[in-house]
Amino acid sequence: MTRAELIQQIKQKKSFLCVGLDTDLKKIPPHLLKTSDPVFEFNKQIIDATIDHCVAYKPNLAFYEALGAKGLESLEKTMEYLPKDVFTIADAKRGDIGNTSSLYARAFFENMHFDSITVAPYMGEDSVKPFMDYEGKWVILLALTSNMGSKDFQNLRIKDTDTQLFEEVLKTSKEWGDDHNMMYVVGATKAEKLMEIRSIIPDHFLLVPGVGAQGGSLAEVAEYGMNADCGLLVNSSRGIIYASQNHDFASQAKIEAAKLQQEMEKYLQQYL
Image (cartoon, rainbow, N blue to C red; front, side, top):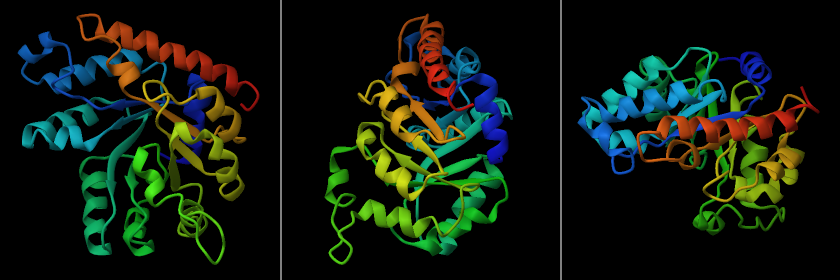
């Protein structure tokens, strides 16, 4: 999906919502366990319920890989079911030497047909470049995450420049691609850092997890992170897909997705 196509989806749906498909057999409604493919059945109903309110879906690969071949089959069926005009993110957090990254790129872009993949940048340019050889595909680099351990490395000060490590990652990596094939992950609970980040990468899209169950503020993310093209994909996983664990799980997911979309529409009015 191109940048122009993504922006058009945001304008059309008045939303920059991404729904995370972190589908856990231990958390889905028990009645689905009687179906032939509980993971796919859950995903299918979540997609049907939320498609009018979101522009992207983000399967977390760990939830599928943990189930072995059956899980990957469920993921493949999910990808085939998703409409072609929504943005798809492989939340895989890959990042290895060039030859290995080339194979990861082939797996996710050619075989599974994702639009984008999350990548760890710490092995440098040659580990990221192979993902950029595919026209219309995106690399989403981890920049500043919300987990407790992020401070162990991401906020370290570089002695020669007195900048933080995540800032150096942004400054260096933005030269590897451009705002048409590279995005960055910035956790919603780090919203106070968004002004600093926007001073370095004003035009790139940001994938922002952590709104909802993790406590991130959509209002703050919009205030500090939006640019002229919106420039945001805000992800919600648990707050939407596990809004209910009963037979009404899909309708409750729809309600939660609609709430976020309606709030997003307000913030978009001044930009689009």
